[in-house]
Length: 115
Image 1 (tube, rainbow, N blue to C red):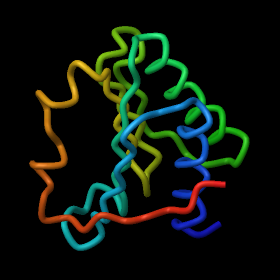
Image 2: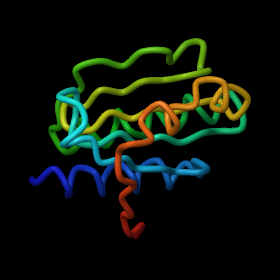
Image 3: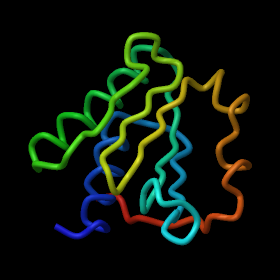
């Protein structure tokens, strides 16, 4: 599976849980951490947890490695590191505070068609 196929699976998974304001950043020429960052938000702790759990489930079903899953209990900012793609799921109230889009503003935004 290509990195772009992984990215599409993940974006579709978070969209299935009604994640809001999904932004994808191409990190390939910016950071050695990952090829893509996916940033999204949920309106409640339960929704943030549901989005993160769906990412985890889709990763397991498709045999994608999950190097790290942090923040699930507090559900204010959940980070799921899938090696090539890092997913940041924020609670709506906390996303503006961390403002990763501004921090990584030199990264090009990517569009992914949602099925």
